[in-house]
Length: 148
Ligand code: DQA
Image (cartoon, rainbow, N blue to C red; front, side, top):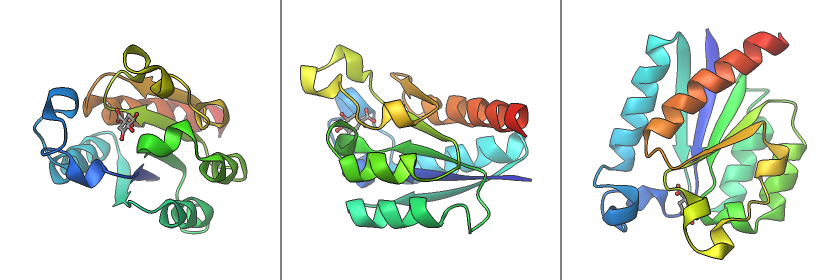
């Protein structure tokens, strides 16, 4: 069974309370339950992790391969736009990484249009709400199959 790590970065623990007009009324728990069950339907084990700390996300990325993961789906939150450390962590591993954003970052403020992590990811999905994580699961499965 393919094993996928789903990472959520800063402020995503506030989903449901945080700017619901942009991010919706559902919580991180609902997001994680949804992506775990979507994974099971397509034969993938999904493990979720959220942190407000950059270093904790880096530790997850560094150890993912040795923990048996086949790929990573990450919503880095605001770190997307400036974290060279996160970019270097993604660039430094062999596993495929897909970047997800709940909102359409390209239709918002200019500073959200730039991602330092997208160039080292296999692709970016933005603007489809929580469903973007499910889309990313299908995409990463297809990518891993094609590579393996
Ligand atoms: C976000 C978009 C980022 O610009 C923002 O800082 C977030 C959430 C999204 O999922 O739409 O925290 O990554």
